Picture 1 (cartoon, rainbow, N blue to C red):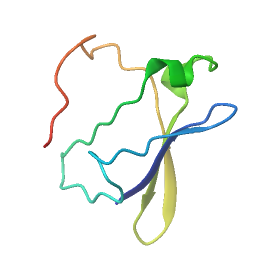
Picture 2: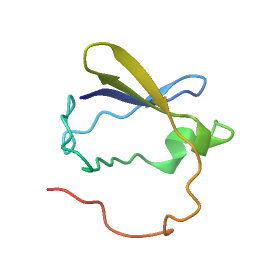
Picture 3: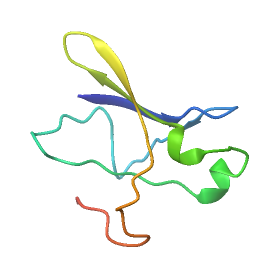
Length: 80
């Protein structure tokens, strides 16, 4: 289950969207996407490596982002 999403910048930038409420339980192979204005991260370097997701199960763990060179520069966000 995803409980928190943020960018580990100084200061941290948290994703809190009414359209994508957390916590969120994902089915196998299900994706979850969110967004924020680019200006919110204008102060950060290497943004593609600053993403963090706190996931819980029997214990908590943090998943760190990494660049994905195969993602198109524009498209649709899945979900309602």
